[in-house]
Figure 1 (cartoon, one colour):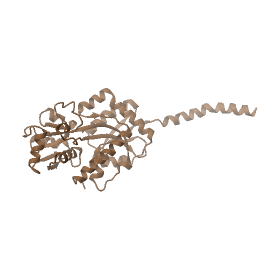
Figure 2: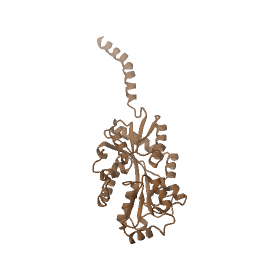
Figure 3: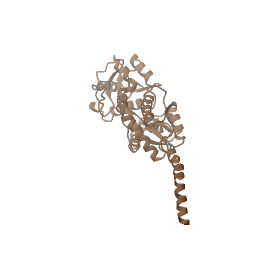
Figure 4: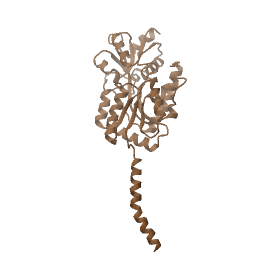
Length: 327
């Protein structure tokens, strides 16, 4: 009899127990609230466009707001530090480029964050391949002619960039090493002012990504000579790759991915990567990125981590050999 009473009491208590457990389990579903997405550049640039385009689709998919928060400064370090110090729960993420994850540790002797210890890779969203562009009135028949003329007068030719230590700057350093050139670097604060001076004839050449330089190229204000990618760009089918011209090591791009604070649970990272990859591969989103000049990727966390390791080895050797520092 006592056993039956206990059984009945347990059965009566079960619905109440399940009712209590259900909300608790529901609260652990990710994402259950707004996601804050830090972008370490001002609004309007390529990284900002990528985050807002993917973020809008991500918000639609998960049914939660995705709030883009622009935090420029410190060569992306300000946003990286804030992300690394945030609660590792998947609700604060960062658009990190190869400056954030690869270049900065080699460019600064004292860095306010450690990318390998403070941040965890989620996915590489896309690449911005670099393009060698010159003033349309410059006396360069093609990229080979540009290299020949630069080599003929060591130190006499200058080049601009979007900033010291930027992918644009280091892409040209890569060409300098591979082609044996000595050129003077003129850093600007962003690609736009550098392109304006290039179009005006104040500087003869620079490396630029299609997202930043596409309008200048389309308008004929600058002329593309070669692309630093494995294959020709669909937007510039007549422009050869550096590899086609014999410079096989000149492959460079701005690589923008998502990272989260170290310690973010693996299942949260996996869930976030899955949703972001689905957003990137949504046909309308993918086409929008391509049209803007971005090569969509959507890698796994492991693939992104492997890329960061190989890129670190490659670029740190170049930065050390060229004695480039931002201290």
